[in-house]
Image (cartoon, rainbow, N blue to C red; front, side, top):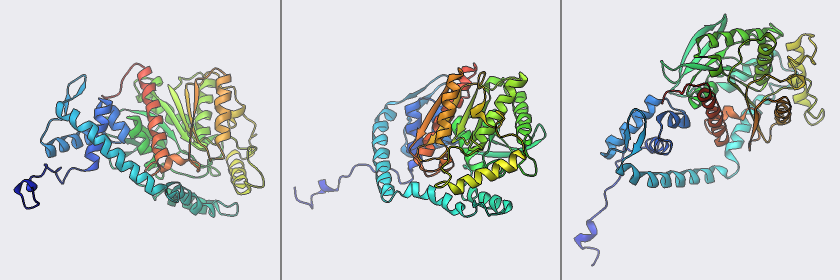
Length: 402
């Protein structure tokens, strides 16, 4: 048959132009999880947004892909036909993107550049307000996930933000931000905590706790206790609550937990520590190679403690008796100076009978989770942390919305 033959004009049907990658990713997530709640958390979406994408794909393809009942989700024959092809397409696309970005280490380089831009401001000679402005400017480069709802709250007298995936979603996460007890804000942390809330499938309370030197120790711990009491009062039960913190926010989480143990108050169901900074002495750092960081730790210690002994276990949890603490998930980056502290904490917690596990990720920066929007390791870390929060909820005897 020559090329002018009409048989050459017969073509296979083409995919509708309006089908987008987000539609296929939504379908694959639901098809693999067979649960809209887990699929939404995996994609950092609210369930209504995920359902809209599935409906849009159904409309564009003109075929029913999923059957959804009260108790289960099933693939139709059309869905079974689409799944392996969609998975293959997305895998090949992701491989192509990863290979392209890997040239020159673009992704990790981008994360590192954010810290490099902050490095000069973090020098020991910088003024405190200059430090605060620089940190807020860095956080402002990231966007709050589009599906996240943010509203103000007075959490036991502590100005706070509540971040949820939907208006009716319960709130069971208390997030304490990092910043050496002298930097950071609830407003600046909205992007990271919003992504965490979506990954966990539950709302998060983000207190704007008081900072030093205006309010030295124990002001931050007192604010954390008040915000915790507020969220526990509204949660189905204390063991549904998970307390989360990054960097020195992780140390503040432990100060909170140790205070609860000492006062015999109800404990949360678990805690997540993201790249925790636990050693205010800076003893794990090289005084020559890490001179700049040593200076920053010293400044934070002096302003936060204001003369209070640094060997108090309440502010140095690596010296504390950790018995009675709830299960801990600790994440660290292989290239982070604080990974030694994370490892020591997990070892000490296990020695004291605490269920603690350490997750190490191949990243070169501290607080790498804040780069979840472009760094695959950060997105994976948030997904794993979100799964831990959901496990806590399931252990407490109540499943999150399916």
